[in-house]
View 1 (cartoon, each protein chain N blue to C red):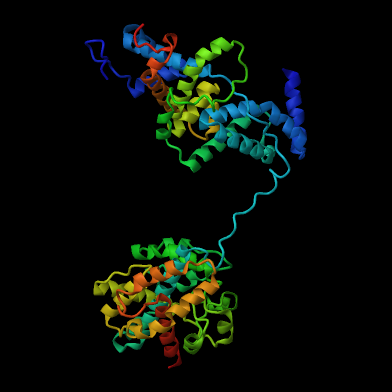
View 2 (cartoon, rainbow over the protein chains, first blue to last red; view 1 turned 30 degrees about the horizontal axis):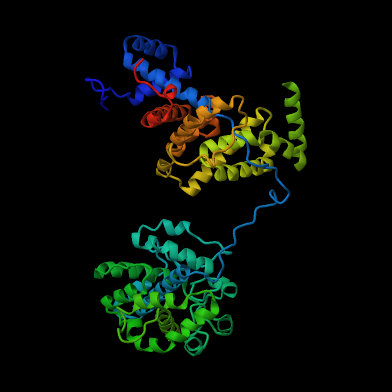
Length: 340
Length: 203
């Protein structure tokens, strides 16, 4: 910084010296530090001036007037009543974002399970199915972790996934876990089936149910003979899917059933959902209508657009695509496989 | 004064049992003080009022945690924490205050000094006080908290360290930087100040 009036450039006070001066003002220096500084002050005009300026600044701040409260701040009984808890997030998503995450994650989960079904059916890949029970650490989105355990969202295990892809599941799984009491697509622990209505109902009831939607209707679930998902198989197949995907060079992008389907296509497993894309058209609108019924605050248009954008590029371009239907088809195939 | 101290202790004892009226007597006694701290930290009356109200509500709820000692300092601690949380919440930035340098029409909202023994002198200081407040506002939150508690409210380093739950060294360094920054900020606007209030670099 240059002083415009003098020939010599104005030295700047170093941070260290500023701290010394500041502590000196407050008598917070050690005896040695104080002696050393005072010796310097004696010799150094600049330092003396800086000290003087700092003292002045402090003095002015000391002199700031005490202010008067603009009103009385006495409290009432109402002020100290127990604070209202913020409303718990409703089980049915009230916002597009939650709905979208839920739908995406649900589709991912179910599609991957369906993929695992095909996997196990394929002779060349039978070994993969036999790996059920092995560690599923590679995949964060394990079935039990998705399921709500007494309403809590299990996040910790998700974060330990070593797969960066799967780390992204945490958000989705959180939403799923939170909302899966109302959601049929959460791969719930069968023991909690009655509470969360999560077990997947047989394909027949799905295809025929007029209440087909992201949240499969309570009645259809309770009445259906729901095939109990083999959680370990689901975990294993998810792990295998990941390794297959990596082997084939395709990356799983969570949150997009589209990508999952692309992976399946690459792996040449019969394109479970893709082959049935034609079946998607009919119930698309119906499913979305049901979404509205289930959650009156959903903005239909936005969710439709969001879903369409994701699915259309991979599935048929002509027909309206439906994330939910992809899910349901995978479910159907899985149910069928269980009957074989 | 022992009497007033006893009175404060008595009121605290009653308030601990849930006696709101006794607590409110304490509120009336300390609200100017808490409002002042809050205003110096937050920079505007509305935020300061919110912080003041929250401070007293919190204080009542936490009365059990007050160990005998300096009740005013204990309140000040709650106030500074309340303000800190509020600042975090509102994410106020120093840039917001560049518009509020002297010259801006701030006087409508300027809070009233508690006492003005010499109105004429007070009027002369108004420009300076406003400039100081604006320069304090230009500091980052951490520096502002420390300089308000130290130089405006005159708490000791260790007291401040305890209030802000930080170390003595941190208080020292934040304070020195804050003082330097305020001083430089005042220099930059000193042409707006009356002659006698200008900082000079040479004696």
